[in-house]
Length: 448
Ligand code: SF4
Image 1 (cartoon, rainbow, N blue to C red):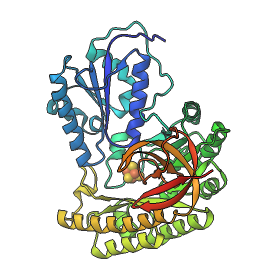
Image 2: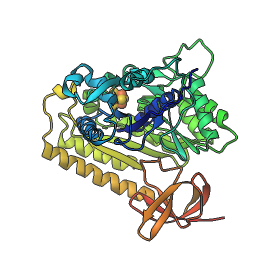
Image 3: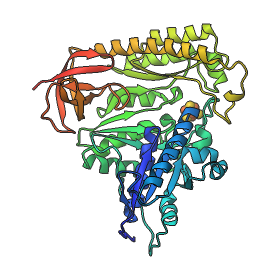
Image 4: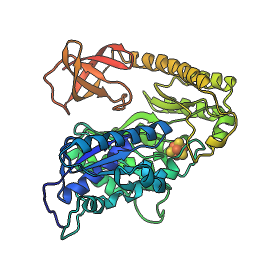
């Protein structure tokens, strides 16, 4: 491998979800191995990489606005750095972009990102003698939690969603590379591995089933827990579709100590007619039975979901049914997103699109209920004692305070624990009694 070192620095700007952070980390690792340094701002950078999001129209707009803002910043800088746009916007709008965005020197789709070194060499005029190889992963989020991508793409083609067109068909990452990355992350001090992908529950279904090795998410979780032992690591799974909750997976979550009894199943809706129009399966009865079973069979089960409000044709009765369903299931955490017509999706062409005022009103009703359920779920932990991972320091009303998260709080999603001490270190795991709560936050006292 040629690891040349030269004085060329890259600024990385990542928009969107945790999956994009993982992709940026991969590009950063490749470029670092190829000899590129890292810049801290656009004005001093030699090249700027912006990893974009295009999940919703608003995310696409934000990606383009940020790119134009970076273009202004680099033109004021000392090097007038070229900008390279990566990720979902090039994947989705590929051939239209060079004409629309002359400020950008190169566009890199998600499936081309492993070739980032050649692209950056070209835009910076770098000539090298060898080929850079992928080194161990460098993480964007230095600290206690790491996102571990186990798959990419999606085969479900929900009618509102552009992801399958952006990220391509579903493909599982190999177990060996997942274990290798997990071990290196844990050796580097990571305390929690958050498994992500567009559809984590079907991990391994696309493998040759005659070849030895884990073939299901449940098998992967069991072997991953074994791979990281004896370190006391928490393993959390996000983005499971209801069909992915097999008997085997339920038993694995219940019986594997490292795997948290926390599940994220974005149902989007409960009404069969709406689900069918969304190209999703299931019914209210089936979903309710699934959540009841999870709560019955897995002690202390915490459930997160998502409600996509104002899907085309959604009636007031269907809104009421969904809100009743949320209330009956008693979700601990619910993300609420208003439907947004995405170019190229089937839902975009559907009749009975909901007007903006109604969309806002339905979304607010859902948020109000989500908050009342979520705040109550958070408050229910007051009086409990639990382990808390220390994540960092935040500026509180009375000065800096330590912040951490408990097992029932997904990092960056579900609120945090505010601690009464200041002398712990990031990565410490403390025994904490929760003495108060506000909104999704808990106040904790460290106990021996
Ligand atoms: S499951 Fe549906 S919503 Fe999720 S990424 Fe796939 S197509 Fe999109």
